[in-house]
Image 1 (spheres, rainbow, N blue to C red):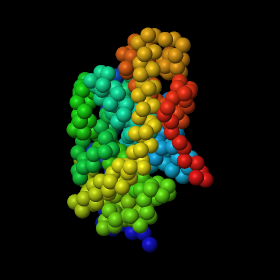
Image 2: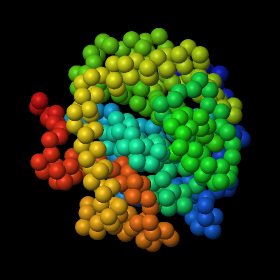
Image 3: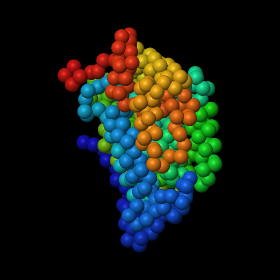
Image 4: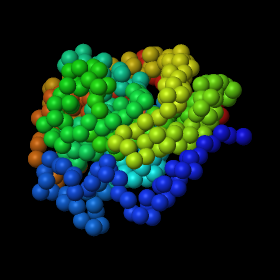
Length: 401
């Protein structure tokens, strides 16, 4: 029988009373305070409020479709029950909205941040991200981070005029860094935001120091970890990477299964954060939360069987693709895949609202944009097309293997 905690009776009664009295959370971000690069565009109305506009802009972007075939943790499995990045984004949004609803926060802002937070993620998850950063750094001295690149996709590649609040939440979401307390660091100036972006390109760990500017972004940030903590373990059990009994880390407080972890984390955060200008969890919950993530690294993410797939296939394949695409970019090869399938695609997609010629970007930036935009299957097919006699490849694990 699972262990599902409940909000205290006192807090439940308080929340019900506050809702009955239409009490507004003073720490929630108000729609009327939205900031955009172009304040003369995308003005809110009754049927498309400020952050609903951001949600719709993100969801209708063609690149949003590619979430569906990007690795969450496990690559090259033909298994529809293994999480892909699209499901992760949905789970983050759902968990964050649950917390935000109980706390009386701006749910549209939470949803917009959640939907866009991983849109700049590479194929093959964090392994692909780390390799692409290595290649990019070797050419430019700059670093690639998926959260920074998500902002680039939504603000530069496709200048959608999203709000500063949504973009800040995406930039500062760093789902690899858990905190016991999340307190927003308020600002409302794009100059500050752009300085954060520039620092992240030149300082490898700059994004680890970023603090979200809104409580809504703090909710999404902790929800990102909640969403993958138990789900990644659940997926690892499904593919036989770990045994179902290897569930030691959550037993004391968080629970033993994904559903318990989600429920109990939500309850503890709300219990400690209602009516306050920050998010907080109990010390023992934070210890279990951190221990769970650490153990996932030890028994899942750093497992030799997972790493071998990348070292012996994906990494050298990415090196060859990067080298070929960079040569095409520098020589302005209009017949290349880079031009036909990426540069022309971006220019056509943004022709009605972009005032900047995408082709004027640095060649390395365009190559990185292209590789990061690829789904896993597209990456593999492109490699096989470009290098039909290439010595590298990957093997998919089929449904009946």
